[in-house]
Image (cartoon, rainbow, N blue to C red; front, side, top):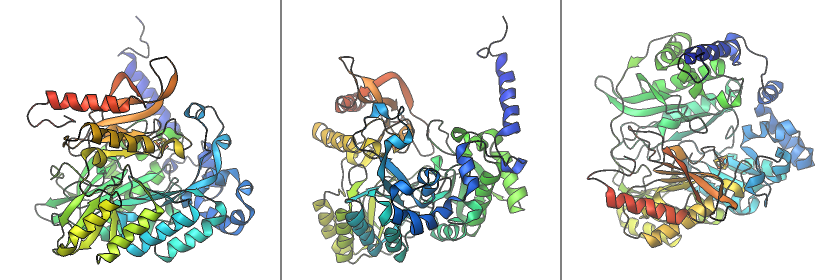
Length: 557
Ligand code: SF4
């Protein structure tokens, strides 16, 4: 029988053909491919995304939404954190068939980057004021430590920037093919069990890289994370580059370097380069890796452009060699892997003592949904109890820092009175949801309201459940809420109900996890639940797990 593409004999030949094709034309600048191979590469070549700011300030904010150049509107404005939002009332069945302009509302989502998740009470107040004045009260906490507004008018953007920048915040490169927000441990510099504080490296990378035209035309987004917490609290496995705190037997505290993680439709976990870097070396290594991505990253297909594809083709050994030989011009030190996380939750929720004897208090809204008025009240609670600092987490939670022992109970009571739980149920604690159909143009289904009502329903039905459990809800096949690494991952799509009607629902993935035993959940073949049937389904899964579990078995095991 002749070999077909499916037979083993044909597989090596097909792989070789793909490999040859890649070397001929994946659009890598470093091997001379400077001709744009898709529309995004073309508009980036025509004009740097960073340059759109001047046009927003001097033209579009005065002449209005309809005057915006389409390549700016759906392209370069992302370099300043702006996406057009979905027109209300368009159902999920139309997402794939309408043209982008038919889905566009004349308002924007605006993302504020909060590198390291660090906020002062003054900054949080400004975020809250902007929400109330310009964003119809919206302000969601994202799983990348950012805040996102909706309903932003182009006319108001310069004033919003002025207010944010006056308190040291920005939207620079919060979206787009850029170095996005740098995740940091939300308890950097304060946690008693900290291995090393990565904050100085975050600040130096921001100073050197963000808004720098040398790094503003990358093949795709570039996600990064730095944490010295033994809880492994920044989802390092799914970032393009991550620095994870470790103790080297000879050199002491430093970082283990991971590259090439990313989820979306072709998920890959990051891989270790096997090197230990000191705090001072982190910015140089970051610059080297982002330079490799810029120079060698694939620019032919958007779906194959993230760093994870280059890392998968090269492997960690070649990647490290190129980093050392071509970019750093020196060898790196070998180093150990991180140890097993010291706890099952990574979100820092609850009351914990700091290095200085004071306390930090982590709390959970539902699926990251807060609003401007609530954020202002949180800033007030912090200030009234002597705190000037807060943090956002990579789990859609927040933390108030620097609370004296005699103020802790009062802070907890004030937060709980705002429906921000310091002792949340596992369902509130472990459920995350992306933006979904309310505002996202790619969405097929509702997510935030669905997640909030699911939490309430599960708390009512299963009041005694006390296991760590993650339920992540996406509104489409992308992975903004990390469905592949949740215990129960729910991927939004249209499904058939019992009467054969097409309704909103989810494809179920079970058993994903982060941590040293990270892995992707299994897509349960044919298992799709309608939105209406979601509480029944989760209740069944959780109850069955409780009944059948073996000693010590975790949900994800
Ligand atoms: Fe939008 Fe899909 Fe991302 Fe949700 S997962 S925010 S629906 S792109």
